[in-house]
Image (cartoon, rainbow, N blue to C red; front, side, top):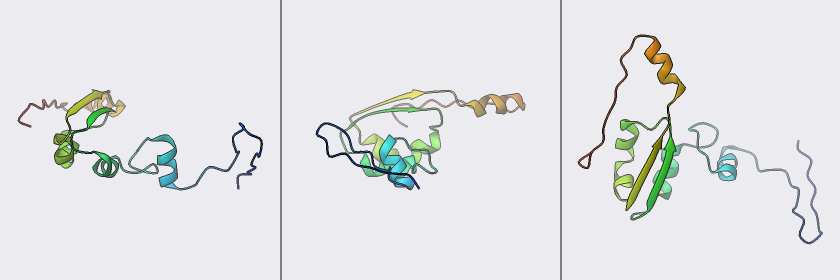
Length: 108
């Protein structure tokens, strides 16, 4: 149990216990992790508006994720991605497996 108190003094924030549960964690940070902080795909489907300007940062976005969100992503006016390098790719390459690269063009 988290103690809570509130302040009646003007200008001072109330010190209340943060909301609990996965929806609360996602709404507090804005981050989605596909586990306790909500599914990124569900969030994007619900919030992408046609004609929106979108910017994403992800080390895990795949061609399969693009296909699953294709209608929403293609309805955007502007779409920017900043790709990171996930740590698991290095471990896959060490196992002798070939890494794959994909290039998305205007035609998908």
